[in-house]
Amino acid sequence: MILFALFGVPVFALAAFGLERWLSTPVASLPAASQRAAARPLSWHLLWGVLYAVPCFFLIRLPARIFPESYRPFLLYLHVLGRDHLFQAAFLALAFFSFLRTAGLRRLAFFAAGYLSLLSLGTVLTARGMQDSYELFLLPGLRMSALLLLPFLYGRARESSGLPAAAAFTLFVIVPLAGGLAAFLYARSWPLWAGACTVVLFAGALACLPYMRDTR
Image (tube, rainbow, N blue to C red; front, side):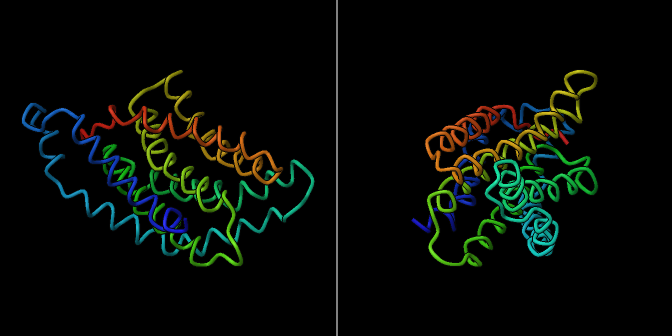
């Protein structure tokens, strides 16, 4: 079971990118600029994401301590949100809005894959005591969802304006908040609702696959 927590995110990334490649438009039929973008090695962005995650893994722990563990519902939500979702997404968003602001969707997704894969590996290796179903299954599933949803929503917001851009940015913020909700529901002993929340996010991520076009 621990293998899913260790390798679920990178294996899912490989499977998702392979499926997306099969669903996408052939390179030969794309415009010249898109063909040049498709010819660039995506593995560099994967490696870049892994390297970026190394300092982030340690930095994330510092602001996460702002929300101490509590049995009060709202404080408990803030605790699991900050521990597992909010600051991980915030550091990824920082990369998107800074040195990846002009990258195409595939490059954003490959960067996110490297970043979230290393965070997942680090989370498992530094865990103390027995891990529960949330850490072994739900948390990796939520990170798989974020791997596709966050790059897709950022790309949509960047390439649109007005209400569509505002809606995409709003959904971008909702993704980690929904991950925190799943963690909260599990911590409150409502595993079925936590699983349902994870499935909804995962289904939304899979729905993005046919639209992951790298045109930059």
